[in-house]
Length: 399
Image (cartoon, rainbow, N blue to C red; front, top):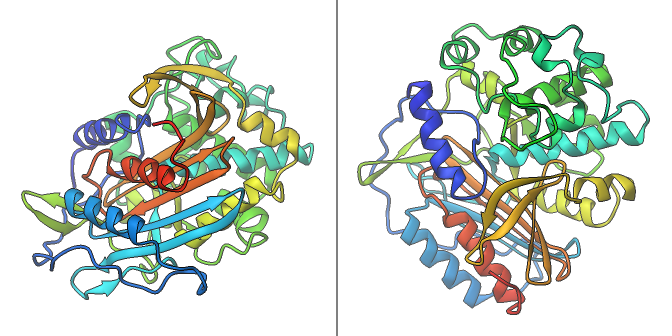
């Protein structure tokens, strides 16, 4: 397995390019895979059965897949929650030459944080969670540097908690013994907050993992069961699930990494999958699951309008920029936010071993583009595809 510090460096570099520092997770030693056949091929009939093929989009996506050496890519375009186009290209499994379909799950990495934020706001809507309550209200005694941290600080990355566990503790949480949420929380509680909570932004996977544990405690069920019962099942999301240490890979697209000039399968150990099952990066979802998620966000069928407004309003400045115009990137609750020209954009990317995904919504145009890929060493390509496809549907959109 790649050492934690090396894994941390790779995912910081890969995701910082996408304005997402830290995507969680790492991978065990990849299993060699034969040289792939020419990539990519459109591998399925369009989802939705009645949609017509979009030759311009198909050609563009295939060219970018070839450029990025991406085995498989699933794409969805929506307008105000209504599906305009959904298609999968390439392969879910290179060994088996299994075509990728919109129903194949992929690990969406840090896009999982948007689900954690929505889960928190559901509890706010029910009057069970106070965003401005100190985290000690829900997780008990904490060290002095944690005493001022609130739930809101976890949601907007201003808690001052670290991006990742320390190398020494990460070896524990990713080890052979599967730790419980309580055991992981006990380890996390030893990490000091290095900033005054609420004053500045610093991306924290640890903070979101703590948030997920709070949601478990407040809801009275495991975090994954809570999301299943309150979001996944009610929204008809059929393939989506939270990672678990030893579950069957059936239904998942195989993740790949570039080793030299070859694509090789990249998988995680049970210990790593257990650590990855926390709120920072734990969701595995299909394209069609993500389509239903976006439709629920735009159709106000998941959260009250006040909670949606809170999620998609600026909570704190990140100090980062986005796009060729270097527009300031801010953060709401679970989402990056930017104003580019006259268009408000909300977005998040996610990377895990073998996967990089991207999710963008343009508010005024009403356009959402979702891209899921099963290749983890391609940098900004999913972001490039989401933005490029968005402008094919709305040429006036800014870069």
